[in-house]
Length: 344
Image 1 (cartoon, rainbow, N blue to C red):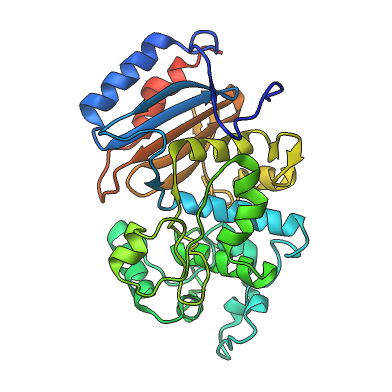
Image 2 (image 1 turned 90 degrees about the horizontal axis):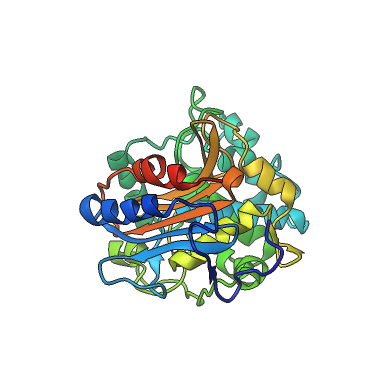
C-alpha cells in the first residue's frame, strides 16, 4: 500500500485534495465536532499513509496519551496472532484450560473443557457475564476486587445456551492476555514491546504490578503504561494508554496486512482471519461493519475511542475522547462526513 516511507518515527502530511479527499467536507467535519461532539479530544485521518486531517480539541495535542479502553482488546488479538506465528501457541483451536493446569474444573464443566482460544477471540465462550453497560461494569468491578483474576473468570459458570453464541465479555480478553503470559513467559506488554510496539513506533513504558487495585488504579491508569492484574498479566480487556498517532500506526499496520517496512509483524493470514466475521459483525476482537457497500473494521473502546480501518479507501481514522459513560455515536461522523469525503 505504501512504497516510499513508513510512519515509524513520524507521519508525513498530504493535502486532502491530492489524496483524493473532499476538503470542504473535512472542514464541515471539524465544525461538527466542535459543535456537537465536544467530548472528542483528537480526530485523525491517514490516507495511503499520509495524514490528511489531524485536529485536537480541549487543549490536547499530538503527544498526549489517551486511555483507549477496549481498543486494548484488538491489540491483544494481534499479540495472539504473533504468538501463534512464532510457535508459542499452536493455534486458535488449542484448549484454554491447557494453559492453566492448576485450575480444576468441576465434574460437570464439560463446556470449559471444550473451550478454545477461538471461543475467547470471538466472544463465544459462554461465561455468565451479563451484557449491557451497567451489568458489564458490575462484573468488571467484581473482577477488580478479586485476588486472582484468571481464577475468577474461569470460575464463572458457562451456560449451555450461551456457549458458541456472541456475548461481549472483557473477562475473555483477559484470559487471552494470561495465555500470552503462560505461552511466551512474558506479559502482553513485555511481549508487545519487542514484537509489536517497537517495530511500528509505539512507545510503551514498562508498568510494574500495582500495589492496590482501587478503581482509580485499575481504570484511570495513573501509572503510565499498561496496568497488570495481581499475578502480573497485562489487563486484557482495557488499560492501554496511547497517543492518537500511535493508534493510527496500529490501524495502518492492519491495513497493510501486518507488514511494516518490509517486516511481517503480524502474519497476513491472522489479519485476514481477524477481520472476517466469525459471528455477525465480529471477528477476532475487531468489530466489522458494511457502510453502503464499503467494508470497515474497527477497534472500539468505551467513551468513544476508535480505530476505523477502511481497506477499500486505504484509510485509517482515529478518534480519542474523554472517558465517559455516555457519548454520541462516532459512526454518525463516519457515515455523514468521513466516507462521503473520500472521492477516490
